[in-house]
Image 1 (cartoon, rainbow, N blue to C red):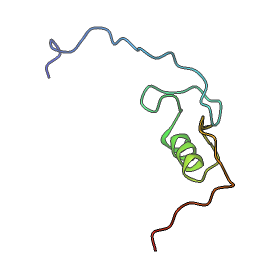
Image 2: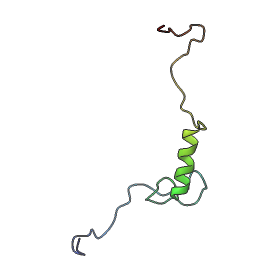
Image 3: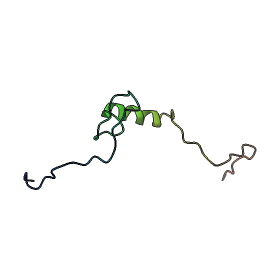
Image 4: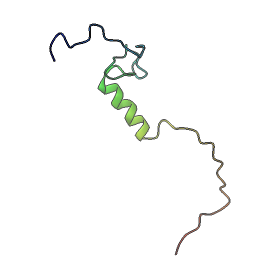
Length: 69
């Protein structure tokens, strides 16, 4: 790409704020995190069950699941 083809101004659509892990300023590349390290820390927390998403479904613990034996 030549210099003529490059846009003059880059418009950032996301406002940069603090990283949710370490509170440093976030970067566009790793938004909303400041680095790949903080992004990986967050992913690890999701995978290890530290974060959860509440369910609207009511669980009935009195009924045992059917088994196909």
